[in-house]
Length: 305
Picture 1: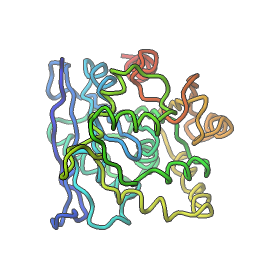
Picture 2 (picture 1 turned 90 degrees about the vertical axis):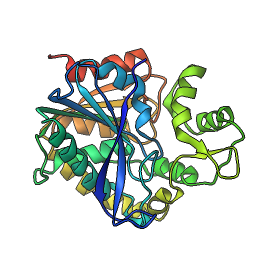
Picture 3 (picture 1 turned 180 degrees about the vertical axis):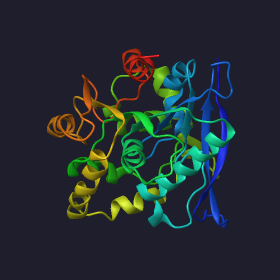
Picture 4 (picture 1 turned 120 degrees about the vertical axis):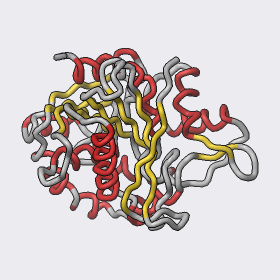
């Protein structure tokens, strides 16, 4: 089975181990036969996740494009940040610019597409919606996975309750089951699919057993947020959304508690006028593991090629 290559890019901002920059890991998939294929699809994960979330989708899309799946700072193989308060979309956007510059320098990007799940979608809105950013090329197509400019406060509270909480597991299987309970919104998965999604989320603990593979401090900015602050961010997020020139697809879980149907409707009527696909029996957020979800992404990114 085809596997990705693991690469790193140096990004501005100190790492917890003392260096003045931090390394962001990214997984690159390419089955095109051309190591310099000009079509690049960037897939960016949600708050506590990491780039291997996209293995199934990336394996499929990489037959026709280079697929880049970063571990956002503080997650997976990437460095932890020295200043927890910098865990947020502004820092992540700067990191993505460094990533795109390195990928472009290695082999020029001719077409740039973006899939972002939850937090990864907010980063995508920042990248695609700010015309001042020095991108190698503009984002052509943007798939927002269960996220938009209005984030429902009860959902943010739900997420804040579990992010960064200490957890220790005796086995990978035990960790996978614990993650399944927290991730009911991901929808139905077979045991094998869920284990494949969960294994990269765990790492060996110093005292034996397993622990979650992210910096618990990623929770601090979110846990310090008030409802008023969350609502105050909406005009900026709408401004970014309205600035998007890319063809935009919103994929929403029908049971999502993070983005409502009303927000999805508003996204159809303004800015890039997103097309909306709603998935039954899924909440926050679709994983793009199921065949029907992979087909949605494939048709969106590759359907006109």
